[in-house]
Amino acid sequence: MSSTMLILIAVAGIFGLLYLVIRTKLHAFVSLMIVSLLVGIAAGMPLDEVIETVENGMGGTLGFVAIVVGLGAMFGKMLEVSGGVERLAQTLLQKFGEDRSQWALGIAGFLVAIPVFFDVGFIILVPIVYGLAKKTGKSLLYFGIPLLAGLAVTHSYIPPTPGPIAVANLIGAELGWVILFGIIAGIPSMIIAGPLFGRYIAKRIHATVPDYMNFEDKEYEKDLPGFGMIATIILVPLVLILINTLSTVVFAEGHTVREITTFIGNPIVALTIATLLTFTFLGTKRGYSRQEVQDIATKALEPAGIIILITGAGGVFKQVLIDSGVGDVLGEMMAGSPLPPILLAFLIAAVVRVAQGSATVSMVTAAGLISPVIEITGMEGPALGLIVISIAAGATVLSHVNDSGFWLVNRFFGLDVKDTLKTWTVMETLIGLVGLGVALILGLFIT
Image (tube, rainbow, N blue to C red; front, side, top):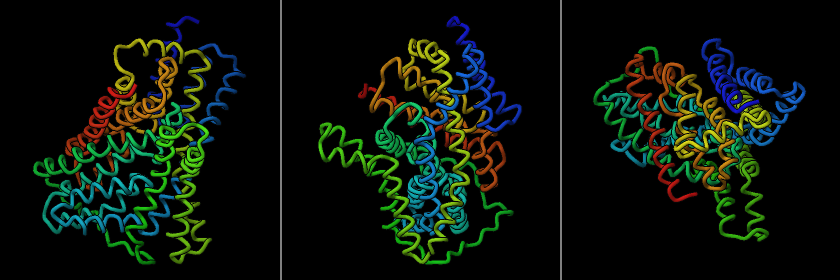
């Protein structure tokens, strides 16, 4: 089949995916599976090979992602149930004081979203925003935007959140580099889109606590855990994974230290250790029975299931592109583009994001499309970490009415659609653009 026909099939597949998600409202997982099958068939693959490719793509992706996302979900749920999220926020607010509460909320969001899903962290912490707004008479946005920025930055850029984990797995990037670059890109993103933008927009839009939001202080069965314990448990997997990546630079292959750090710094092992720590120090050591801890862990896997399936479908899409030959043609075409791969990855993710709204679908689709470019250009090591950050940045920008996060903020802050676009959408776009800028600058020094 000619190159032109293969490109047309790929383009038709992408538009077909967007149509199924937007117009027919089919679930993203089902849509990705349908498009993957149709692309394989249209490209001339034998039907039995299409099925084999689907199985290989799903299995190859979920072998890693299902374990990491599942462990991360249990880790985060235990932190949520124990009151660890509340403790982080309260301690930071006490340390920073009311005058610098914006910074405290931004940092709290940044830390909380590492193990806890974005929407869960926001719902737990938004009563603190309400309390500060009522006490000071300032706009909800003065405190809410920094919190949202902190949560959104980590949710987009720093594993073990599902998005960057999925992309890293699909393009073969080491999570250590993704974490390192995610932190480097995330800090300025949080500062600019959070406290700085929050202060600016709060002077122009005065949002108050909606009448329909009657929050009462949440009661925990046990005293809140200590701040030091919570911060340590959150940082354990990040530090172990980073040490693993850095040891490959410092120690030669076969060195004893490198072998040890490679094992304990593997994301699966690092997250297993962190999850066991939460079960022990936030669970049984604080009076929860083993059955209660098991029930909490089981409950945590419910929202993780759909993320795992969508990521697996992204792996199927990628594998179909490769096995059908469409990926090679697309890769050669995009590799010949005058745009650097980092910018190209950002634009692909941004287009899908604007069209259908889901950041996760945008990320896995962009990863599948950009992976042939990576193979052709021979990118590896730190450069792949930057590609993950650029895809995450593209999947963050221009959130609007087709994104569930848009309506979450709209409802909890009592904004109309116009003001939500001026606040949430601009904040998300700032996060994405700053992240892209950092990735491009780092890309000048990393080949």
